[in-house]
Every structure is written in C-alpha cells, then in structure tokens.
Image 1 (cartoon, rainbow, N blue to C red):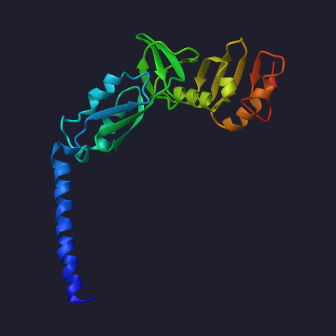
Image 2 (spheres, rainbow, N blue to C red):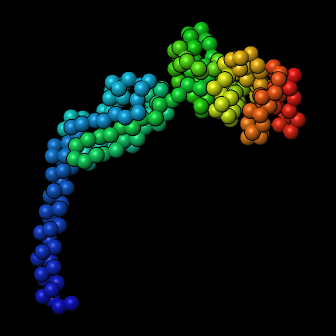
Image 3 (cartoon, rainbow, N blue to C red):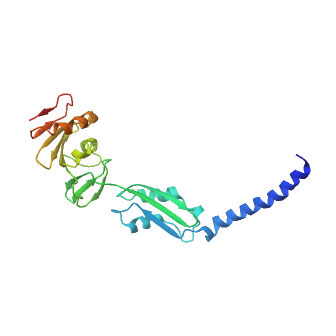
Length: 223
C-alpha cells in the first residue's frame, strides 16, 4: 500500500474517529439520551410504585450511565420479587421485567398466614391466595429443613394432584402427607425418589380407598 493511500486513510479516518468520540461524549454526559420512560412488566402482587421507588434513576441521567445490574438487584430485593431484569431500550426507555414470587404453601403464625414460594422462601404475611394448601409442621419457616422438604414434595407432585391438595402435614423430612380436599390422604414419605412416586400416584388414586401410601413406590398400598 502506497504512502498516498495511507495518507488518504488518515485524512478521512481521524475526523471520523473524532466525530464518534464527540458523539459518545455528548450521549454519555448530556441529556441527549436521558431516561424519559420506565416500563415495568410482570407485576401483579407487587405494587408498581414499590418498584419505581427502588429504581433510583436520577432525572436527566444518560441511558449509557445507568447501572442496569444494580437496578435489577434493588428490585430483586423486594420481598415479593424472585428476580428482575433491567434493559435499555434506546433512545430513552428503561424496561424492568419482574418475576414475582408465587405462594405454593402457607402456614399460620401469630401475625397471620405466612406465604412460602416454590423455593421455600417466606416472602409475605397476608391471606393466602385461593387454592394454596396449608402447611402443618412443628417449626415452619424458610430455615426449617422439614418446611423445605414439604415444599420439595409438593413441587414434585403432578399438577393434577397438587390441584387437589388442601393441606401438607410434615412431621419430619421423611414423613410427609398430602391431605386432599375430598378427604383422602396421600402418604408421600420424603422427597427422595419423588419422580417415581409422581409416576405411580395418579393411577393409584383411581382405586377405592382413603389412604394411599406411595412412600415406597415399588410397594404401593391402599387402605
């Protein structure tokens, strides 16, 4: 490549680089690309204003200067939020997508019903949504191994069975029963071997009886 061609590249390239740097500086440090709209998606149990209160996006802040990870962490710290995702939508919108915690069990306490999600996290004290089973155990709570085992058992049960459960009685991590709303009881045992238990429980429930023991899936009993 001749010197003349290199000179032409430099003559054209340097101004282009300068222009790009200037535009980036303008976008970064001025309100040209400032946040003007915040879209919040996925909320139903979490009030919209609670999410907006923790965003902490200064007025006039450039889209390029917002810390989306830090914002997502603040939103995810709300008790009813399982996770959050924050995205820049240029030229001026921040989109916040919320994954809320959903109650799968509740237990009664002095303050009222305590809601537990599918990870065994206690996230609210308020009336349980319709259809959420009650947990009966000695020391319910997120840190209790028996509570976590009960949540795991309910999560492993087939959806058609979960829809019938009115109460989960957990005496220990290996002694868990599902009381159905029609008065029947499924003795599940522990959370071990839950895949095989889930495979046999629905066919077993078609038999006459009131107590269906699938704690040993190779030796199911009905009485």
